[in-house]
Length: 245
Image 1 (cartoon, helix red, strand yellow):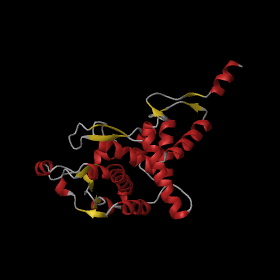
Image 2 (cartoon, rainbow, N blue to C red; image 1 turned 180 degrees about the horizontal axis):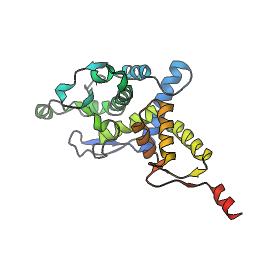
Image 3 (cartoon, one colour; image 1 turned 120 degrees about the vertical axis):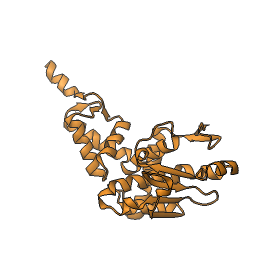
Image 4 (cartoon, one colour; image 1 turned 90 degrees about the horizontal axis):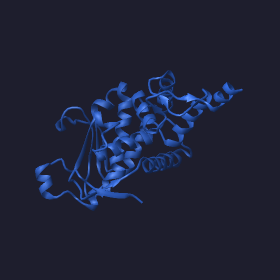
């Protein structure tokens, strides 16, 4: 059951506090359930078309070619919450129009889905006050800039949660654990791998290739799950045994 804490942003009286394990578990249920319902099995990378279908299923409208310049520079996604209705999602046309930005499109889609699934109900429970909307006409929208899509500060709780969801949908935790575990075992390593080590770089590239994401997205996901760290991974227990024999 979700835990609620005081919302210091003033938007709500209380807001949901999700731990990483809760988000990982729910996101895995969502994406595996969706893919198995559509194809009878879950395989990755999930296609961009399937990501759009997932949003279309749970939102009222998805606009992939929106002009978001009215919301300021570097805005790549907006979710509009409407009490009593499903939310609307708008994605910057600059992403869908450029095939070289497909990874950015995929992370933006999953980020906005995080708002759709985990946050839309809040506007039904506690709609924005008229005085809040007068002071801020965008109080019923979550405006997402590129620098917060993947890894927002935890003080910005809605963006942090949606950013975590982004990685958890594209790179489900059980799949990441299996891939990283096999890599560690095959190279005789244990513990976190140094993010700048050759092994760290290789693991990031393997995750990026397996799940159709950028190396930045793969690195952030591995860091959050503890597979990457600042130092180097130690040798395996078998190496210690060999040294003592």
